[in-house]
Image (cartoon, rainbow, N blue to C red):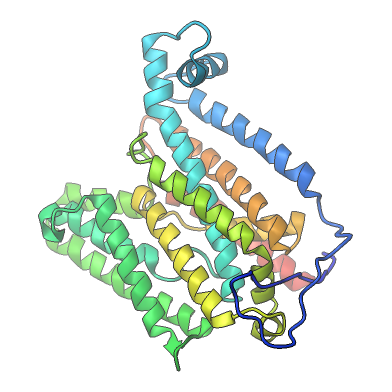
Length: 367
């Protein structure tokens, strides 16, 4: 893969050291052009959404899917049959759109963490956020909401994610600064701690049904998707995605190293904390509605870099679209592979992701 300089600059509100030079953007990249890749991925995403809504235990023709969506959005055409309308609009479409939002969010968080901590193995769950959310969710499922002040499973999971984020950031600080290596070690350690506590909660519950529900949630599922729990994660992904795209040059600087970022005027410590908090909050929102879905934030950024290169101005939007398409397709597989049962989505992402990651590892060693 051809090497290229990674552009970087500080945002307007960051303090620039006296005499620091402003970065200049890379020109003449040999990677795929963004105006070609993004529209193509939009078309692929629309096709994947239509296919995922059409396929299921009861098949619905793609033309009927389009008719139902058009009728609800703009009120044109002849309304579809009541059953088709119920299946498409109330059951499948919210789930498919939630899959797209979660996939896009996990991918963009993975890109951000890999640049922020300068580690290619970083993903949305390396900071222990998912494990913290899983612990709180397991408490609600096994002991009831009264054990966590009446919070629902999703709300308790988000609180657990916030607690994990605060703990990891606190443990990774030294002399008032977050150290990337300590951040990863703290995240992995707390993940084991929270996972052990989750296992203890399940063991002590003595309820086989509750234990099965906890396991299914921990492995990831979108079966509880509805219009009511779609709006928050979709809005969070949109807002955070736009914010991170505005920080693309800063991410380029951080990916180049702290010394390079400082020479380009980036307030490294302050920016790193800000990006970690934003990424962790988005991860918490996504885990709260989907459970633990691994490998998306790890694999998608690496695959996208092969196509568009390491420049985050290209990497972030393309990774979001690829992540959305990927999880929509994976969720479809989870619904149809063992019908009428449903596979936890984390199983499929692991089965697909592990071989891809090993291939990427061998490819990087050979290059």
